Image 1 (tube, helix red, strand yellow):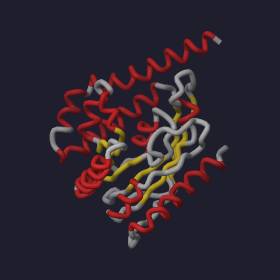
Image 2 (cartoon, rainbow, N blue to C red):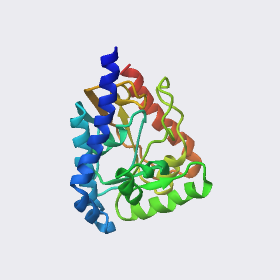
Image 3 (tube, rainbow, N blue to C red):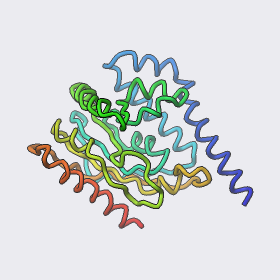
Image 4 (cartoon, rainbow, N blue to C red):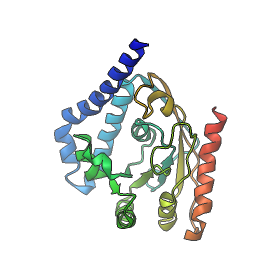
Length: 243
């Protein structure tokens, strides 16, 4: 048993090393890519390389199944279940359309990663009403530039015994406000491979599914709950059938 715990300690340390290496090596390019808003597409390509580097380096054999072909000239609201530290990387390797994460401001304090995170993502303090309202304005600015938005609607990392937690309204209000389709993604193995529990995880397969977009054209804000429930049920059904 002692070897298992030693492996998990080294495995977690290795993850953070993998996170840091591409940022250090590509630091000049990353700085250039965030210096102008128009260059975000270049930054996004670098971010996708960073994500692939980490997943492969961790021994994750990721497989992406898609039910649809996304329009590269269209904006979407991407959502997914959230149970792992690797969810960010899996989202980046799964989706080719440049998107911006809406994420908690606490991640901005992570060395190196946080420097670029707070300059490229939309940060939110979920305990602050003004911060949540500011997200709508920031999202509008990104959408006007042709980008998509990504939110993990569980609003945080749920207890690992919960298959799929309740969804918050934010992602769906944004999607209706801006009349953009919601695209649910399902991460089947992330919790098993690399959860937030320190002494757990290991190399292996990591599957994701990109589901059919849910159209929001013509929807009004009064339909937020219906859209939220439909999106959650789609993901929950997929997770349940894979159990």
